[in-house]
Length: 85
Image: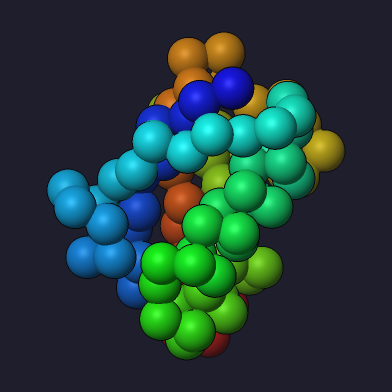
């Protein structure tokens, strides 16, 4: 599945337009997190990649837990922790 991932907070500026199209193997938010961590490890500074485990993922209407299915429209928002978590 291909997801349109929007980046906010400390992750802004890491990708052109603060978003990226990410190829995800699997159908859960945990699969998206794994794919984004792999992408970050190759393309982002280590400090930015290091905050991904603490980031929240959301659809256009709700926060998503790792075990939940990815949104059918492929849209994901990544929200880094604020003020330390």
